[in-house]
Length: 200
Image: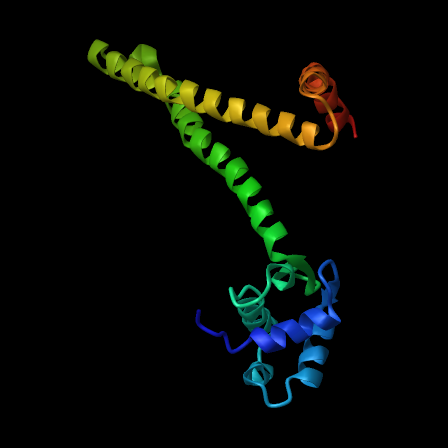
């Protein structure tokens, strides 16, 4: 397993900033200035652009922090919490990976359905009554093809979302039956939740 040049300095950073710690840009710069002591990361401090300097420091610390040579409970990542204010957050690597897995599912669902919906809207915008019969049939075929794709994709993501929500409720102490009942209640209340969001 290859050794990263930044493993040691990253572990030193974790000693001073445990998982769950907020870190400001100023603190990151001050800590590096104090701790670098001839370490290769000290060259990052010579970068003139402040944003680039912070970005490079974070990238190098993250490289050492996620190394496979480090015990899992000592692996971490420095996340950007607020780019404008240059504020960061130290998160455990396993927790970060879990969050990304959840986000990947959510984003892929939107990514799968969104292009289909966009194409359907384009078809809806066509003045169908002004088309020739052949052109009308082509539009109809396009719509049918898209709907044929959309329904199984929508169903697959809906079923997986349902499964994940039930699992999350079970993990929090609900029985499978209670979890299902809660989901049904949530679906019933959803229109009112949307209304409250609009009124707030």
